[in-house]
Image 1 (cartoon, rainbow, N blue to C red):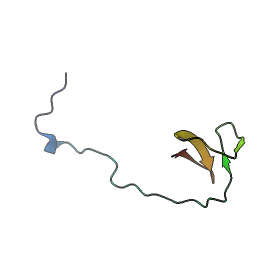
Image 2: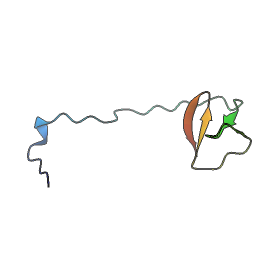
Image 3: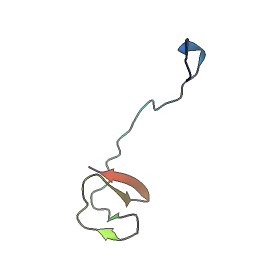
Length: 56
């Protein structure tokens, strides 16, 4: 078990900001295999513009 008594001594790294990029809805969406997807399902991982994203 690790006990941290004074957390000010440590430099914690983390996410400071999250940006939301609204991609053009006309761009095609692909699944991870590379098939084009016409109707993506919620909470699935897809690729648009070469970037992975979770469709919500």
